[in-house]
Image 1 (cartoon, rainbow over the protein chains, first blue to last red):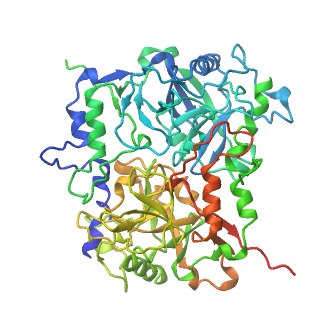
Image 2 (tube, helix red, strand yellow):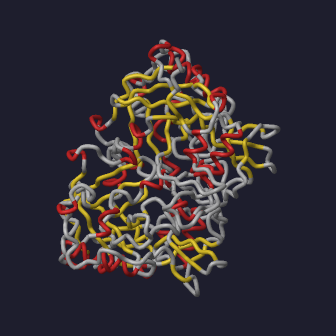
Image 3 (tube, each protein chain N blue to C red):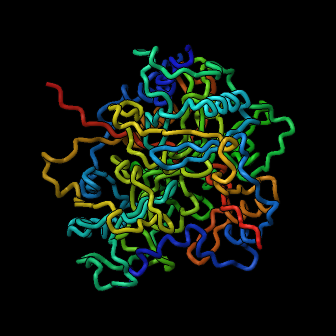
Length: 306
Length: 306
């Protein structure tokens, strides 16, 4: 059967693995191949967290420019071992995976894990002044914000009318849970987005960073069957054995990864390549890209030529 | 610690469970509460598939208006038991979950499960004439298409310049895998979207329908570790024990579900409620909604009074 030949090959070209360059269009992979070492940067050791979830490592980078107080508090919590022994307590399909202290704080507040030297309450850090932020802007229209782009490797949205900029809730973005009071978060309860970007959350909650690698340890978990996706039984919770600041991990044990810098011409070329469909498979090109469909590439650090 | 009080309650309001109505704004839940029986419809028995994945039921509705030949072929495949005993063979994070015949058609084409009375090759059904389609249009801008909205319970995108309409690749949308030839799909290999809408696929592949219920049986699976998320070992594949057309299931065993009709004033009110943030938790309202953030509500069929 002729058609069956394509059952496995059918989506190969979707990932850019089979891009056949048109005369003036490079594929995303080709853009990266032409990149220079200076287009890449190391992970920010002081703001990168390695978290072990059910034996797998999730690597996320904090966004101190956007949420300095929360980033500092999370660094504190992590360095004091706060997350060690806690758990993923909620996974709601097409929305969020959330982790923190599984203790029911209304029923047994005395059993909550102490926050140690970290702050219990922080001011809202929902947005920052747009001012002259060096955002690598996208030219593409976005329904939720007049400006979108990237800064420090984070997706960014901004509104010149209000003069504010913020990190939009794209897949893999991490936020700090809060109650009804806007200053009720402290970074001890975190969530990441595991579905279509719920941009209605933007400007309503403090975004603290973004997962760089290993999100499947949070996104591929069984969905909770309780209200809002909370796990109903303690044994369903997914254990977090530890979280460590990259700076506290011995150099030799650090993952040798690099992130494509979003303030480079290579980044702009990569975005342009993503905007256009290239290769033999596509018959139509959207000529458009959404800020939440772009994830700055991470690569293994090239070994020095000897 | 004051802040810890909020660890569990923090995202309650996000789902509309705690909406406190503002004078002129109903919450989505309140709109549904005020709906009439005629605002809802039964699942289309001739175009609804119940598929058992690893013991859980996924319910999806085909879109015969958009892909009549593929819908007919899939009905044929399902009614002849084609999918029974096949498997989910690929799960790629933030992209697709794909199912079909696990046999490697290049190495062992003779072992492929026969398609029976179904067609082996169908014409591309990437879009249909826009003409006078009764689309329930959204007023919100979308970067990928001049018009977006809903029709037959499916998300729709359209372009008056080209005169075409299509189903965009939103979370839960199902498509028919194809090779490089646009007429190489037949519906025997299907995928559903499990992440941020990859709208670059729009107009490049035939969309055949949408998951109505149970997508977690496809989205919460372990991600495949092979290229493109294919499972590398046969034992990693997730078994599909059977797929049945709802019409072939005895009435008494059919799931008693209803879908909110998208051609009603209630739908419009529900969309408006989703566009506005309501309740005590939100401090900002996007006043915008994206076609891929709206999923027509499904409910248990009310039992007749009396």
